Image (cartoon, rainbow, N blue to C red; front, top):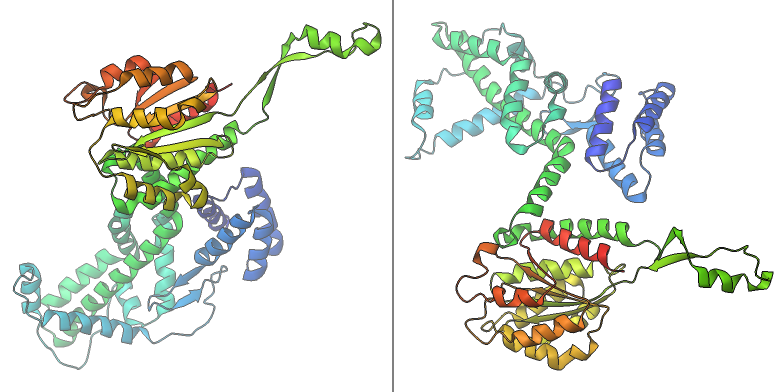
Length: 492
């Protein structure tokens, strides 16, 4: 059972429960003491040793219940006895009904006579003849005998054993479902069963041909059961891995190419990235440099000792949280970039609490109050709805910014401008950007377009880059994380 337990711990890790190698060894030792017969005792013992937080304990309970339980081949849930016993004889003898029902369903579907039916299936059905009820031969293959015994428990145990034999717990992506279904069927004896069905089909003896037809129906029914079993195991062993793969992809893909159905997952990625940056930068505000003596402070603090130096004072650097002005173009395709940059900035409120946000397509408006009164998602949706219309005019937006809050910009201010700098051939008003550049500590311009297009058409990036401290191509969450991370590292 060591393999079962290590597979369970792998499932826990896949569900993002942190389990160290030392904790794994402790769990193995504990299981040697409590054994496997009492399922609840086993669960309670492992729950004391493996999960640490409340969220992890809830995840542990769900993962344990799914790992040590299975749905039998009739679709009914049955608790898996870890010692390998049946755990009850309930359900024996019911497999016949399930198999026949499946077969009848297929027959009914075949009788609809759709014109576009696959011609090979049509030929196969034409060869099937109604042999009627009567005597049926006995199967010779191991899988055939198992199918005709009508024992759901036996079939489920065989399916689980075959899954372990083909290392089903290693499934990684959903597209491998068909591959592992075939491997499990082969491990259960599909090849031998296929040969038997072929021989019975060619037989001139009616009872043998009846058996061939019945085995074919039950083989198709079993394949559906195996496919469902593989899908449940995928959800247990690989769903989190698949999610991590999707998250990694969404970190790199252009935000303009993201489908609306993936927005919720991208929001989760944004929050995770922001949480990582918060953990990295929410340290004490003073970083002491022990190698540099602060002579004036040392003398001042030692005056009580008649000039004797007892209390040394060291130079320190005060890390000041940035005051950020975010100016976002919310017109057209740029809107998605603005959506996630605002979400990113407001998710960093612990280390970046002074964020003032502005949105424009032509006229610029401050939307900071929206974020104070509403949830982030609602505030962003309202911002995009109210300010995304109109023809883009950067010159007018800069003029509005100067009228509204240029006096609040000082040498502690960081201004982040997000936009493609496409001004519809209007006046770019670079003198206002120069004034912002002179007053602020830094001005960052994030352009979602590739650098090769920054000077094409009505783009004004060539003029604007002369008055910004840093201009970056930024069209993915990975770019955004790097820019914000660098901002937090350099602010002192």
